[in-house]
Image 1 (cartoon, one colour):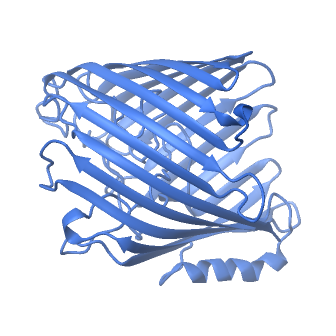
Image 2 (cartoon, rainbow, N blue to C red):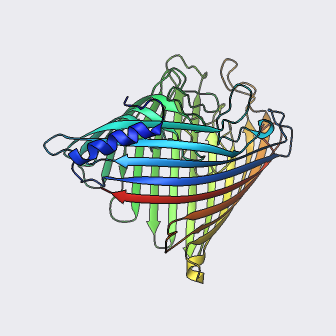
Length: 420
């Protein structure tokens, strides 16, 4: 692992010093994202924390530097990143939104930072990265849902020598969570955890010219579960179809207990003029929820802003409407509304020894409604500045055990990019 110690500046400055020695190929450059994030969660039923609401406002800066590769048969390069976050508002009584880490007294930290880097090697069409990085695969995907992105430390191998194919394999042993600046943190799911465990993956994505595409992956959380993933997708005219399937079985010491789940979803989308209408269906078969680690490691259709609709036995439906105002004379403005309802949850058959006991009752049901309004500046000095306003409502019965919550997000982002 290559990692700076006190703060983000050292990793970025070290990479800048090396950049003149490296070739400028393969999108060598830098980026800086300013992210201003306000999050308010209003609990409509008693929460486990005893709080009536949580509210935090913070400012973050995320910097990335990507070098090119040295010349020769084996190219060498470095990717580095740094983060700095500041609290603008967030008292002890309403901390805990995930924007800011909390101290031993439960207060939100006034500032936090992190930095890391990965060494990369290139041989032909094969690239190996080793160090701290973001990861994006269906069986392990670090999230970027709050102020601070998630990162994982390990190695990731990618090959693109076959036309239309992308092959990947990797293994990760350390993790940096969204509200923490330490690489020895852990990712937790609904029962599974990366604590003292590694996660491994391998898979392929096939994206040929034409309407069809597919992906096949396998993942393993050490001594917890093994997981297989299949995706089939179709894009024809105004239609889009996307099908996803996961099969999960416990393995090794089965640290989360016995697991045998099948989860699948199908999402259909039809575009007409400035609008799009989507319908989705999702089902989980098994006595435990569909579990995962890493905030975005679930590619099922009904995993949305607050709920994942992944309870044991759960079936859920989605209806979604998108409106692009560009065709109505306001480019950059978009509106999305979505409703998902889940029923049939039955956690009463969860294995007696395991992490899922008591999480769900019988007859669990819930629903979620999301509204997103976003505007991206199209030109001028503020080009690419984006403003997002989102409102989420979630309601559940006691057998589902989710919070009854209304949540408001306000996010302002301004990206800067350049090349060496």
